[in-house]
Length: 258
Image (cartoon, rainbow, N blue to C red):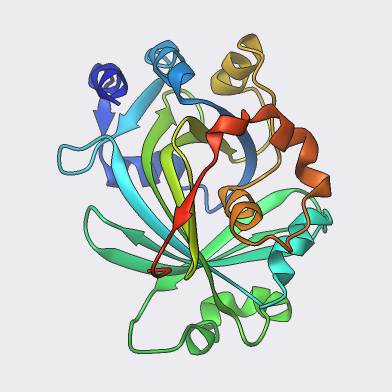
């Protein structure tokens, strides 16, 4: 990671407030990519003139923790696998740079638009109770009862913000998935996501095309579920998974899901 840290140190930095002002993008179009970690320094270096970088407390490579919730039958995962037009992800995201935690609901509709709604998370109340918050009213018909903690994902994130349009690119590396019994890691791979107010030209997307890195419609949550839950369906994702080298997934054990 030293080469990556050296490369991102040359970017013009902006703070969280400016990032949110330029590209909060709680409603957006998402495009995902996965590629080898050793390609990342050249990818980032090519973005210097077109993107600023998010910096918080002097850090540009930021640790994240995200806990996802699903039913025991993995309803939300299988909705994604089946390609349903209206689907949710329910999660708690912890921002380690300031200790803040938010309960978030991501709703992707049948037009391909992702809307993220969030509220401050409280350790003192069950997630099911907090999901009754009026902020989540629009998603109530898709929120399931008896949600349980399914997977914890830890990773390091770089956030790039376009200098010329409403676009943000998140680049996640050192990704680790765990539940109560196992852990799965992707030490040699990066997952990047282009987030735009509406579908349109993107320098990062053009860069991916120039490097023969194809768009892939699979999230970190789905990758983790496939690795941790043997009964999870994966036929729909096989073309994407085939792109990943067999050495990219390393298995181990975990004592808890966080």
